[in-house]
Image (cartoon, rainbow, N blue to C red; front, side, top):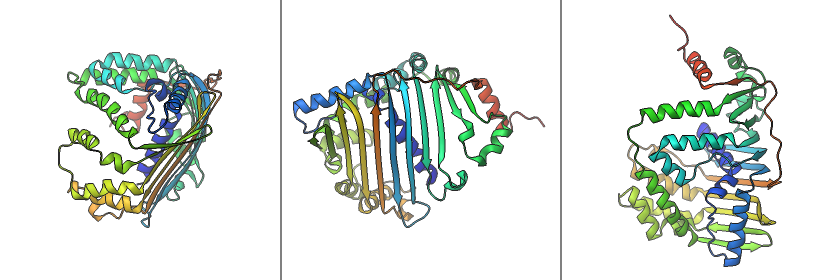
Length: 368
């Protein structure tokens, strides 16, 4: 449970930090009940932020799973700051469809974008009590830099408990880098060579369905507009019960909805999915996300999982009492030049070095 929670937290952090890139590629936020003028103001802010090409940000996030079962309960607090220059190397739905049709061309596009992006990210992660032992009770600190396609990490900030492992692997005690372009090229080349003739059916379907889902969600989004802030609330139960939405879902899973699944969808009315955008000078300067899923909804979802999958352990699992997620992302200096430099004298490993290191860890580099 702890590892899944931490992985989920990291995913949210990366998505939030790279929001400008998403805006630049798919600047089509759902406007819900906003007036035409407010919708234009919001979409313009998204577009301007996504195309700013540089800026700085701060992030504060909390992921809290409350449960009487200690193996399920956990709270992770994350703070971060950083800066970026260039368009983040992310992939839109269109890119993913193209990747399926022509993996080699998609890989080239990804590595070219990687070369033109620089970023710095400093993370402090307060781990759940049971997981904090690996850091000596202190928060986990990660300092990351990406410059010219090379990713760097400050190994001196990692927990002291893994220092012996780093020494065994003969890694430096400070900054170290990995050539991500060389690594992506090698890994991508092997995947392309070992993959049967590509089919774009699934990605193409996803690319076609996403605009449909956005349009459906607009029917269940209600905004309030207070000064520079637009706060939207999603009626998740209404969306889940929408006939057109269910038709899209059935195209992926044609099995009829069980009574337990219907109850789970109805229970979403008790959950809260809210986000707030603050717009300053026609740019997005703050994004807040608030999610609350109460025990009643979690219990219904657990029952639905048990009814649809006989191999699931949901039938014998007591769901959490409540799940809360808050994310507060703030931008500054959008469009202003940012200085992001590679750490001085940091060694840089290639893909071959990485494989040698992994082989050594797995015993592949020793002979009997």
